[in-house]
Length: 110
Length: 119
View 1 (tube, rainbow over the protein chains, first blue to last red):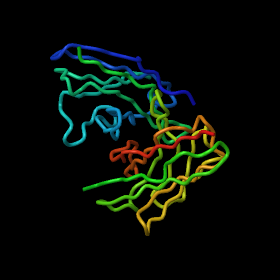
View 2 (tube, rainbow over the protein chains, first blue to last red):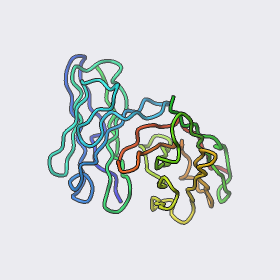
View 3 (tube, rainbow over the protein chains, first blue to last red):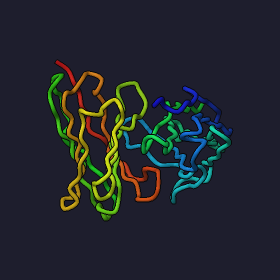
View 4 (cartoon, helix red, strand yellow):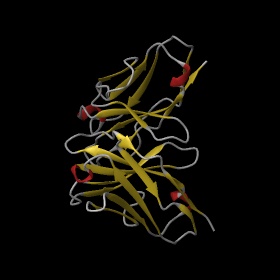
């Protein structure tokens, strides 16, 4: 099964908002409310940022928000900060496997 | 403090085998499903394998099916990944991650162990 599609890179200035898209099919993103988002700094463990499309785990800043429309999910980072610079991955439950990751997006804070 | 710690990585020749371990602490291990996820150099995260909390249900990515086996020992709070017939493209950092039963996201991750397949 092919990875979910994300833009390779997104950038923004401090304080701005950016949005990362995650496009799948009706067999994954579009078929379930089981989309999650992960932040990954190189050399560290990935960190859960959003689960079930729009829920934030305890301890995650409310600058991070998620949504979904059809086969595309989105992660928005508001009030961009230097520490947000990282790779971000979406993930989804699918009809044929327990999990599928997106291609990943490198976020750069200008 | 909930923690997952991977071990067992190293350098191995193509065609050989390696077994990774993931030791859990700080939570009730037997109540959680578990995943193995890997990241090859310069690539993104790739889901590798899943095992249910009791060990009954197992699923694999097509890229490792028939070569890798996921298992767990709930008495030892440890997850395993037996990797056979290793290929150069299996070179990656391997992470274990937990998933609460009935939910579909990974909320606790280990820091990973590196596997290099090279002659």
